[in-house]
Image (tube, rainbow, N blue to C red):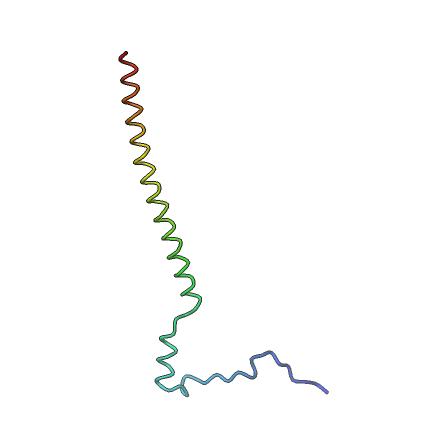
Amino acid sequence: MIEPKNDGLSNLSQPSVGMMNREECQETIHQKPVGLTITVEKIDRILADVQTQIETLRQNSINLGLVRGQLAGMEAKWGGE
């Protein structure tokens, strides 16, 4: 006996667009696509990390400028002796 091929899709009933009522269409339109939501959340986390790194670099730049200023002052003092 030949058994029918069960690919997992034959049991699913998909209404045609003509059979869907207005509320069903609106619900479908307003649902968040899961894949896009995850991607946007990942991008938000990456941007937050980048902003943190930028702030750290700015603070390091400020600190480096202060150290350079102190070194220049010490060199001027030692060079003038």
